Amino acid sequence: MSLLFSPITLRSVTIPNRVFVSPMCEYSCEDGVPNDWHLVHLGSRAVGGCGLVLTEAASVSPEGRITPWDAGIWSAAQVEAWKPIVAFIRGQGAVPGIQIAHAGRKASCDKPWNGGKPLARDAGGWKTLGPSEIAFGDYPAPRMMRPQDLEACVADFRLAADRALQAGFEVAEVHAAHGYLLHEFLSPLSNRREDDFGGSLSNRMRFPLAVARAVRDAWPADKPVLVRLSASDWKEDGWDLEQSIAFAHELKEIGVDMIDVSSGGNAADQKIVLGPGYQVPFAAAIRRDAGIPTAAVGLITEPVQAEHILATGQADAVCLARALLRDPYWPRHAAKALGVPMAWPNQYKRCDTGPLGR
Image 1 (tube, one colour):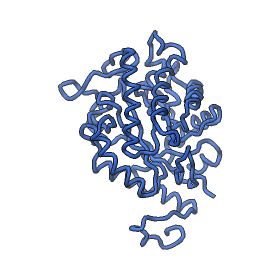
Image 2: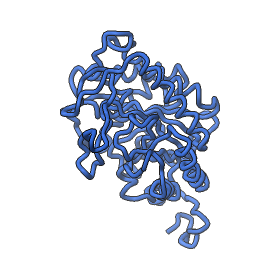
Image 3: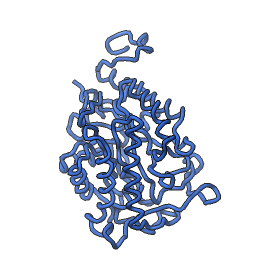
Image 4: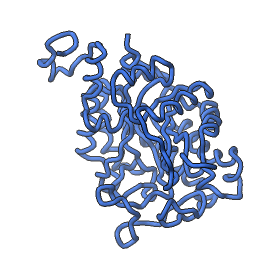
């Protein structure tokens, strides 16, 4: 039996296998509205056999976008554009999920293939928001969010969850990683506030927990909510695994169903030690010490490697990004390598010449 290709049930949602599409920004929207690119990009991963297809970060507001070309979930037009994409994913037997996000001080940038640097106002940029007036590297410093900004942002996340549900998504993931807004509040490197939202760990967790709670409350009780978390800033005196475990405990208490464990992104001078599965130990520790299911991510490229992560109890699922960009049919090739039959869509059954599709 393969754990990688066994189903996993979160609340009432059964995901057919444990290969998840990691959220990957495509920077290809206009006014936050997804289009044919997103249908093909996400749809091909569903055809390719992934169990859960998560969208790229969908911003809860225009100023929460990383770039002006990011996806959104703040308008009725975006809801209508997501609907056929969601329907196609579901039609292939996969579960459609959406990542809900706000980029904070790392917003207002150009596309990565244009250099990815902050945009000036006359080039379409805007003033960013953050927990404190502390810049990310050489980016412009954000405006410190006032209490009314925090309340409005929580409301934006709640409304985004409502709209995601209208679009037909079955899983919602809150983005609290990679140096974006919620991660900025968690980390003492970016949060130097002196009010109830800064200082102690409990204070730094307060706003991210309010957001997660708002999404959980807005999302149906029988459908799962995930949180993507950076488990370490990879920098001394920053956010670390011990604090991540404490945060995961709190998320579990409010009804979050799984932690999608990544790392980094909040310090421009971070020192990441890369290697195959380099973030898996974070997922294993959070799973063990917080008692919550986790998804592992980070240079997971080989079927046996992914199977080993699950078989040894380090995580409950794997999220793939670059491996799925290179090969949308990675799950099908992995199933073949592991000796697991996988049904093909009717349109492709002519290629299935044996029990393993050889």
